[in-house]
Image (tube, rainbow, N blue to C red):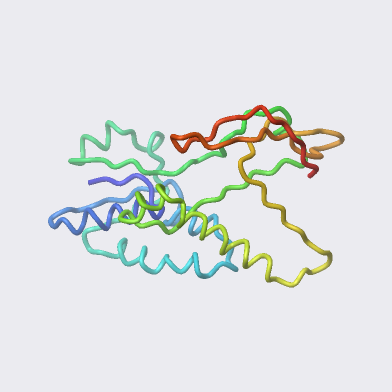
Length: 203
């Protein structure tokens, strides 16, 4: 079997497959090292999050698992190529590029991309976590708490958390100076719906 991607979801899927018995898995990744955002997206000063690489390594070190690095599916290999050589193919790669907001001003100076994610969800926990958001929220709070406890180096710091807001437009002077938001609200189906209430926040 072929698994495309080597992030935590891919590795935990590989672990589940190899437990079935008689399954040999080739894990492909376009990058030279495995584990996706755990390796490339988590700062070294967050050892608790990065510590899961030990359990991920154990999966890839199994004799019936091969890690094939620097292979870009769609360029070096195509899906039809993989289907010819494998009984099944699991595509579970992450986002290769940033997701755009689609609002005016997002490409101007002073606008930065930030990716926030829960990096250590196991397959058995994923459904519950997505239903309750408890794992995701607690992971974000750990990162925020760690940041808040550090001693400021050269200036005071303040972090504002705003919930239920959707970005509408970047406010621009010489560079991005703020964001215009629309207030959202939860409907009965647990979906966020716009309210039409607009506010602004300075950068």
